[in-house]
Image (cartoon, rainbow, N blue to C red; front, side, top):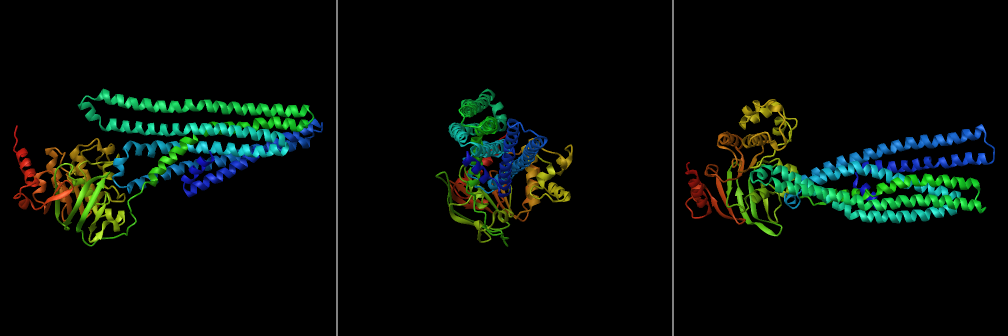
Length: 577
């Protein structure tokens, strides 16, 4: 129990840890105030037994009791406030730390770890800490401290009852330890099922069009329902498994209270204890177990807190790419790959590629599916780090650049565009929150999306759904290009930006791309003849190697993948209905 509390405090940031430690000191002070009830009652009982109750005696007892109640109330309020602030601040700060940490993890991490798991940790797990941890830490810590203070006072009054109490506490903590051990696997399984449920919900929603198109609604619904049922079973199983332990804890505490009462009465009847001490022991037996009973019941949730902390810390402990380079501003934008290789999960993807990309030129990368085109562009822009060789920008290894100073030089237009649930204007000015509206409109006009934006209900202030669900594919692509125009980076990476665009939007999109790529260094993954033939250099990738490179006119004269690629595209273009 103590170890779990320590792990949680270590997980907190310095300021929030200080809040928790201060609240624990206040909880100790609260326990002292609570314990003042015992001498107040003892004073009154003693006066009654001696038949010497006076106004002074009553006033003294009243003052001590008021000090106990008011002092405990004020201190408890402050302790609760500090613990609440510490809990919510910790979760808010950790969410920000997780987001910042995820930003600099290699892209391969997102292949190893499902989106559902990551989302579950950043939402469900952190919410568990936010809602459960603060309350549990407060109740358990204050319960333990109150018990410790009252135990010391009872030992001071009568060591025999104190020893009985200590024996009872040892047995209680043995039961509690067994409950904590029983909850360890259950808490882990519960959070795993939470993650699995989130993953299935995301999969179902994202793939709903395919589910309907292939009439898989029943099958996918069954899979989702199975995940829901398993999650329900995991939560129910945890509760059912812990109920016997909590019942036994509660029974033992009441039994110990009874044992203390009986022992005190027997010692008094045997002439070995004064009546005053006997009455104080009887009253104390109820005070001590009230706090400990709550602490024992809530301590079962500490395992959930512990697993939640471990899951979040596991992400934070995942090694980031080395982003501690220098803030470098390149004087030219020549890119060079020198014998680079890269493997993912023991599978070799890029094998000894060397190439030069001069600034203000267009380089098209073509080749069979799975040949390594996207991986190569990811290595050139440092989405991944190469295993061997190096990639340079302006003659400097891109690993010498800090990640932020490197990314200033790149803009990306992916085949699959992601827009945020925000206004269109904010999606265009992404990363430049202070950019004036005039600049946003200028970028939108260059990207050929001003006209359709103005037709929306609120124009640039129209809030679009997450992922841009309310816009067509071509409209999303043009907004993505407007975003890239706003950034005005000298290097543009295009991942076949026109691949999934309908013919009506294609002409506008090509105009937007032409505006984006003026006087830039262009690296494009291409599958269409019209986007390839005018490139300054064409790189043909097959099996992770460069099989051909040159201009369109040079490669079309050679037997090989490129000519086959062009012939197949021309044949497809000649089809008529």
